Image: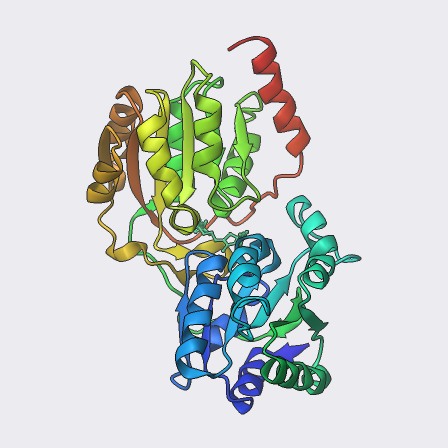
Length: 370
Ligand SMILES: Cc1ncc(C[n+]2csc(CCOP(=O)(O)OP(=O)(O)O)c2C)c(N)n1
């Protein structure tokens, strides 16, 4: 075990004071420590952008920095890592700090298994030297690796698995809205048919939806939990909706939406009237530690209009939920609904575990052509 503050101090001692990345639950205590005035931290919308910022920062300062991410985000990071930072191009030495979900031998969710198994192999294939840090003793090897990065202008990685970092949440971000996510989901289910498909994003939404569907015994509801593929819910919804006669309701979190915001332009311009996009905006990455997103200052009305959604609606208060939601669902899409969501989740939150069962339901509807 390592205290998150000790890890931060290790970096500071090694003359590293600039950090950027996408939040991760494994690294949440460390990210909390980055609120320290001694360092700069930029929370980015996706891991590729974090690599980009680190490259730019290094080019200007010639000082090492740290790019942090969950191993699920390696895919997003690989493009700039291998085509800009690589030794065959600009040789930028990046220090990657990677939360290692799905480490072989550790119990984890299905979406982390292959990624966890392949993480070391991916780094090896990218010629990125790495070590796992499990305790403060590993700081000696980590220092050597950082020296290697500096001298040879090569990127390196530090892997950290679940429950290694300890620490405290300081000021937990909370959104002041008064609509709880589960209240919204319950209302949504009251207003749609079981053959309408719900595609729900990575984060708390899928877990709450799963909990509610089980509680309500609404087991025939067509639903696809995007437990991985963060940021791709809208694209999956679009692909499905083109050949569907029923509604396709995409439920997205602000963190997930911003990760691949460009995809929404394609949806808005190419989707049919059955495409319903709902942003559950709580201004943070709540499920991995509630680190803020940049959604607070975005005017989603202007954004959705310029992306060419047919119409935009916003629900801010619980007493307008019923009316505005049913109006939104009746209107022809592709339309955009923003719902301001209060942070906090259900006490007993299930983990979607029967993903193959969900798939069977979806395929059954395909066979029945509904
Ligand atoms: C590519 C990728 N990067 C990072 C993660 C880790 N991660 C899981 S959920 C999440 C936050 C999602 O935020 P949001 O969509 O706002 O939903 P909320 O957590 O608020 O329910 C993050 C960063 C991931 N699963 N995949």
